[in-house]
Image 1 (cartoon, rainbow, N blue to C red):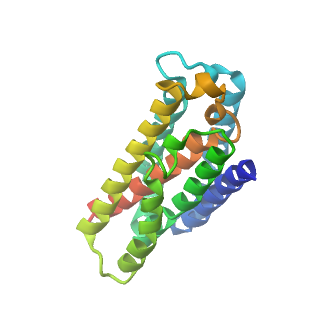
Image 2: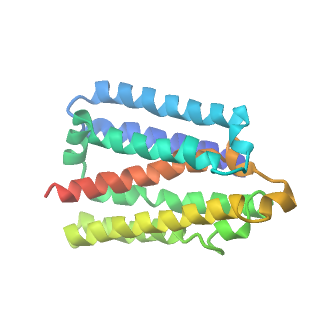
Length: 221
């Protein structure tokens, strides 16, 4: 069930992105390009998982080098392209914040993986992962933004806090899988296997993506 959840949430996030590209001045063109980029990236992440390269726990950590860092670069390049600037300009400011509520589902899936013995407790909301709070906070924050109650500084503060929490979550995962005895004791490396590789490879970048979009929206004021 947890595995299906990772597949389903990934698909939902991709479809949501394609839908939101309606705010572009060239919707069909940018949707086509975005589809190619998104599904090519997912194919790359899955292919890397099957190569076995990510299975190695030797230094330096392979998943950050081959998955997370390239994903960050892809996010910043994509949001900086001229064709995407109209999306940032025309998208209502509460939407990228509201979408961050998907992190509630992510955290529930992570907890489900923990209950199945695939992830250590440290990476759940019972450990060092407080990301579910950002997902919950996204709902009232987005509502207040839509009503014009929260302004630029408050929105930027939410996004900066969100990025900080994601950094802590990333630390929890890296330290748990690369610098602890979890793998040696359990022999479990599910994080770098399909479908769990979609967590650092796709779902994490989506969270970064919408933070970047929201920050750019407000810095343009």
